Amino acid sequence: MTHKSFSELSLNAKKIWDSLGPKAEELTLKERLKIPPQDMPCQDPRIRKTNVEEVTAGYTLEQAMIEAARCLQCPNKPCVTGCPVAIDIPRFIKAIQDADFQAAIDIIKKSSLLPAVCGRVCPQENQCQEHCTVGLALKDIQQAVSIGRLERFVADWEQVNKGGGSPSVKTSTGKKIAVIGSGPAGITAAAELCRAGHSVTLFEAFHKPGGVLVYGIPEFRLPKQIVKNEINTLKSIGVAVVTDFIVGRTRSLSDLRQKHGFAAMFIGAGAGLPKFMNIPGENLVGVFSANEYLTRANLMKAYDRNKADTPAFLSKNVAVLGGGNVALDAARMALRLGAAEVQVIYRRTQPEMPARQEEIAHAREEGVVFQFLENVKQIYGDNQGRVKSMQCLRYELGEPDSSGRPRPVEIKGSEFIREVDTVIVAIGNEPHPLLRQTTPGLATDSRGRVITDENSRTSIPGVYAGGDIVLGSATVILAMGQGRRAAQAINALLQS
Image (cartoon, rainbow, N blue to C red):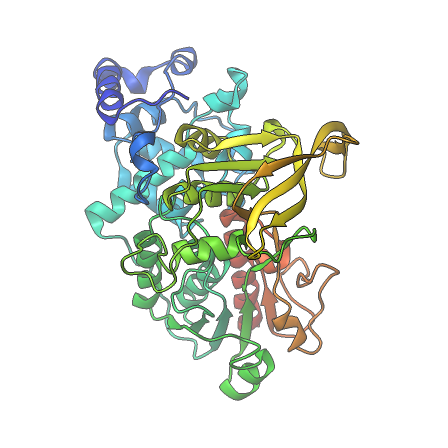
């Protein structure tokens, strides 16, 4: 990816819009297909890898209008089928074409309560944009209409011009609802339930609400002020937010239900227990789970060495194990924390990586090195118990496995040594066992995920669940969809 300056992109967009604007409404389908997709303005890679400010700047007005003009307004709306919360995508994009940005954000918020978040971090290329007719017609999914960037544009427009927006709330029902966890599923469920007139209390284990949006996703991808704005909106409509409250330790779920009069409960506690590889050397100083590494940096601001109470581990040569967005977040954060070299170790090749292609490109621009078809067999330490190197293996791709991706096959006798002083393990997460251990009768599967039916009901009457605690590690928008579905089921229960 070639980096273009903000001024260059802005000038190019203005030229295109000056020629396009007057006749945009009259363009034929063929003419729309010829409109060039708009690149996202970004900080220069050489500068941004030294700070934690947001990498992307968002579309200019002209860029948003041009990108919206690329939409073909398909009658069958294939993009909507790929959206977990079924946003009316062609309609909100048409509103942008008409320069009615308030109408655009209102359309989005009928289905999604976190457009500024989803527009930044959701994998649209694997959801709505994967089904875009423009991308299919041009035989390149990267050429699809940039739905997520347009969603971000109108969400940011609303914040700048309207100071955000608070949803309307119905007359009080007198019913109390507890929501466990303040991540995407919990925020969505709390908002939907409060809007229905219920009294909602949101319980969060950390000292700041926001869940994975705060502790997991770095500032350079999702500014924390955006999450804070959403939490403030919840508070403004009457949601009570209780922090430093660990359900299962501070109070059991059963105790909350029996002693505090909650008519129903929603569990959206996420999947915060990191997986490890169970290889020799994982207990050495300098080995981190990506969860710990990112929590220190994001929630506790370890990058601010002059103020942070939990300073970052100083690294020179970092290896990150994994190929998802969390792995790339950790790798890019390591650069910002001063590492001279950061390598991502992944058993397959780039096409099989679950991380977003945009994030891979950004990581490459910043200097992250990708070591494909490799994995780690053992980590070695020095005489002080600190990481000094690791033994790696080379792989080749075999037949597809249950995920549909080629299975990585170890090449016998291919062992070699890589010199590193820090290893970050980013191979996934599972739900923490505390809740299931302290909640008799709560059914879970072999991985510790809460089992629910099609209406988000758990095995305990009146208790619902959704998000990563049900799905395992998933996307923000999928978790939101689960929170919304559970809220609708709770509303139906309390109205019966």
